[in-house]
Image 1 (cartoon, rainbow, N blue to C red):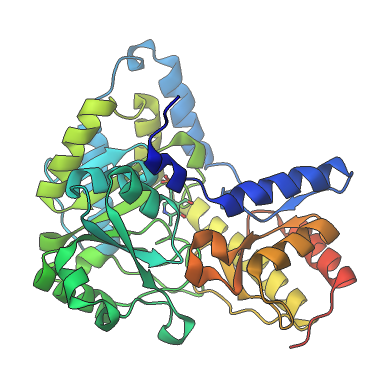
Image 2: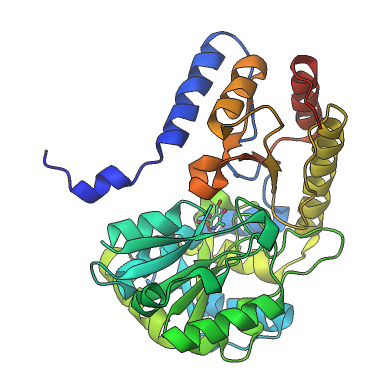
Length: 390
Ligand SMILES: Cc1ncc(COP(=O)(O)O)c(C=O)c1O
C-alpha cells in the first residue's frame, strides 16, 4: 500500500520502544509497575455507572445520537461552566460534545488550517496536538516550555513572521506532561497575543479538577475577550474516572464550534446516548468522587516524592494533574536511557520526557496511576537498585 507520507511523522518512536522493552522485561518474569500512561485506575462513582447501566437496558437508546450531543448534556455543560468558572455559555452555539477531548483536539486543526499554515504547539506537549496538525498538513512550530519560565511559553521568542502565519495555538494548564499551572495574568497575555495576530487559542483544560491543597485552576474563558479568540477542551475522563467512556466537550467561540460540528457531522454521529446520560450524572450529581481522586493522587504523589528524596532524587511537588515531572538524576544525560535503566532493573515504567518533544529531554514523567501500595513498592524497588547524587 502507498501509505501517505504524513503517516511517517505520526507515531512516537519513544513510546513504541518503551512498549517493546516493557514486554521484554515482563517476559523475563519481572512484574511490571506501570506508571506510564495516564489512565485512571479507579472506577467511576456508583451513581454514574448505575445511570449507564439503566440507560443500556433501555432499548430506545441504540439509535444514532446527534453529532452535537444531546440538548440535556449541552445544557448541563453550560451549567457546570457557570457554577465552576462563572463563565456563561450558549448551549446551542457554544457547546459541542466530543468523543473524549482527544477527538476535538485531533480534529480542530482540520477545521482551521490550510496546508502549510502554522500551529503553535507546546514542547513538551501532549502528543495529539502535533498529530492533529500533521494530519491536517499544517506546520508545527514548537513553543518551548522551560522550567526557568515556570513552563509557560515565552511569546517574545516567537518570530513576528511565524506569529503572522500562525492560525492556531494550543495550550494546556494544568499541563500534561510537565504538571505546571497557569494563572489569569498569563491567560490575559494569551488573549492579547491571539487578538493581535488573529490566532485561535485552543486551551486543553482536562485537569482542571485534579488540583491539590485547595488550588482551583482557572478557565481560559474567564478572561474578557477569550471567547472572541478561543475555545476550551474538557473531559470527564480524569475528573470522573470515565476514560473508557470517551466523553469530552469543547466550549467557546461559536464559529469554531460550528466548524468542528460540521467536521464531526461528516465523520461521526456523536457519542452513544447512554454515555451522554452518564456524563450528565457525573457533572450534576454528587462530587465526592472528585475529592476522593484528588486525595488519592496527592497521597501517591507524596509517597513518591518523599521516597525518592531519601535516595537523592529530588522532584518538584505538582499543584495539579496526576503526573510528576522530574529532572533525571545527576550522572544521566538521556531521559530515554534513564527510563530504560529503571524499567530493566526494577520493572517500573516511567516515560522519558523526550517522548513529548525535544524540550522534554532531561526529564521523565511519572503517572500516579497505581495505588499507594504499588507506588511504595515502585519506590522501594528503585531504592534497592539506585542511589543518586542530589
Ligand atoms: C492533556 C490531555 N488532554 C487530553 C487528553 C485526552 O482525554 P480524553 O480522554 O478526554 O480524550 C489527555 C489524556 O491523557 C490529556 O492528558
